[in-house]
Image (cartoon, rainbow, N blue to C red; front, top):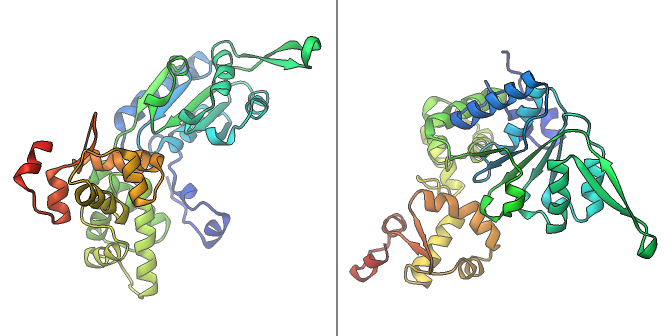
Length: 337
């Protein structure tokens, strides 16, 4: 397959990440278990000539949930209609989308855990029976009209599957979790992105960025573009390990992939609350960030890498956090870990 270069016009169109998205399962790097399972489910649906079962893709942000949904639509040869739960304010918003679907279409709802309860109830019958009821008129003159929907596939993406209600979750036939990427997979992704973006970077430069990308392709591509910006302004013909390290330090991304906010969170727990335990609301207030952002964006990686321990009484800084942040660990604090 010949890869097309991305031109200046692509940047002017808006989302530069879109041209970087893989367009097939073969192009999609990593998440092998999830990818292989979905490939089988898609092929089975094509053989049966039926719609794919409703699907939930969950895991931390930036791992490829939206990309996989688009690949599924391409592999099935069907249209995908995309929205976010926050954009669906009232019943009419969801009804307008559902009644405009065609046979086999895919409806992708991002952040589906934020869907309002009243909208969930509409989805129950839409997902199970492919029918929805709408009320026409008011008062004693009101009547119910049942609308039959074409068979469609709902793909929901979420970072917090535990928040999705049981009745809604039970209506999904396919539930797959995406995990953080290993550095080798990120190197392959970065190599492809650098070719598409015409960025000259050697293997060591790619390795340095991959090491600090928090196991997340979206972050890896963002860091690649920002390092490239530094190289362009400073008239570097190519990017190696030394320059990548220099640029990443300018971006305040350290050797473990922690950025300024990560370190601020750890500093608050260690300095303000003596290592914890402390509630996430207190942390959010101290760093002037939303609770949801702390829980969805920062905490998963910090917990996965062992910087934070989360218990019933709150968050606690681990020994790794003390060492990484340059704080001495007191004997009295070791009983927290």
